[in-house]
Image (cartoon, rainbow, N blue to C red):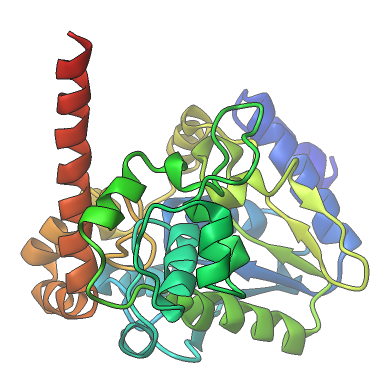
Length: 333
């Protein structure tokens, strides 16, 4: 019995899991130098367990991109993974840690795309005024893309409002007009603490395939960028997403069947996700903050110092949205 046949015969009776084993086996045989990004989260735990079962895993270089704001529980979990699988996870430091990025460029707010548009408008000393696109372009030259966002000028998609329009985020334009931000907003922390670090690491490593955890069922901007689990880029490394097709139930079945242990962020803190600690983009950042307050008070203090204004502004926006919904509901009666 060859290695792949044995793996499939021992796998759970789940076609999505079996297919991921077959595809991962094939990709590991076809490539010679592979980078696998490890975050310490539940998706990357499954990817590592899956890869380490397959012949060719010795070709994989595991890397963790340290943003400068990480859970202690995540760092402990990396040590656990190294010991369990007998591997080394390389720690890549941020070019500019998140605290420095936020101090220099501004704090993230709502989403990467929204932060980018607001940042561009702030650089042009925008007055958060409700005028036509033509009027605003005359007043703020060389800012067309952000002004188009502000004026809802992008065509709607077949599924509804385009994410490139401000109205994609309910009542955001009304909120910004009523409560203009009194602090700098920027998405540069993602760029310098993670994206550029990963890009430089990939380039210097001369890898022919990059692996990372993106699941179609999870949603979000990254998921929408891919049609399937594998991409070939001319002149660049191939990209493979081993658990792209996994649904929540498939993840749970894999975890239970192979006894995958996640970090204390899940088992003790009861968090549903782990990314950059306390990131204001996360819908559940309040839950993260409460977990930090209880389990990691030093980190709780740190993220409030770094993201404090964004937290306050996000809470104000969420409250504004709820109030506007109530007003609209009363008008319809």
